[in-house]
Length: 276
Image 1 (cartoon, rainbow, N blue to C red):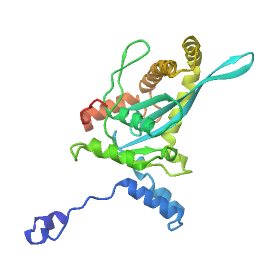
Image 2 (image 1 turned 45 degrees about the horizontal axis):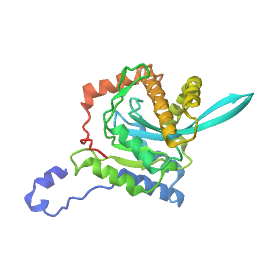
Image 3 (image 1 turned 60 degrees about the vertical axis):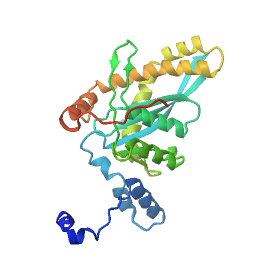
Image 4 (image 1 turned 90 degrees about the horizontal axis):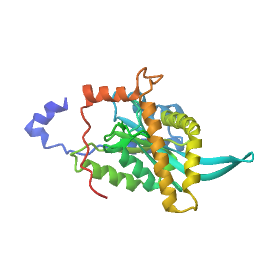
């Protein structure tokens, strides 16, 4: 065993400590070999996200995806679009909890993805539509998986991961992108967004009313006011989901998270949140 070799003073100096490659490098290499047809398709599929099938606790694998929320109304039998918003959602694959999200208008970009990622990491003080406190998980995930459509400048995410670890004091997050044309690797979060679309449809009349009352002109200030209102609905939908028994877990997602924190994880450690 290497431990015995390391204790040997004569042989210990022959070894050099090196940092192992991140899993993102591994996945990128597999994708490259797959494109070059250097490895069989079945091996590539097995290599991708084996971790996703073996997670045993929260904060091992989180998934991010985005969905367009189109706010529209019907007039004289014709559907009229009022405003397009985008919901970026983060899902922890073990307890099926949602540690973070980001709602915005305009075209999704790297800053939006980073905002959702950062929001998922730190504790949050949220309230439901009725004013009750809402608990959302938080913490630094070992692997953070993003849809390949979100690929921007990889160095942006690498810099954030490095900054969060603060020289190894905190966990180093490994940020990866799901393989192209392989939707099954994001099925958890995509199914979640599908369910959310149904819930938003149920409250769309209330959202449309608020939009019509507040959006007299298409300005950023009024759009931001609408985003804040729809965000409150989003928090409400997430809270309802967290407190509903999950068909696969056979328990409420928030209970699964709390049990893991109490019995396995302990309270997640995150760096201090500084302004800006």
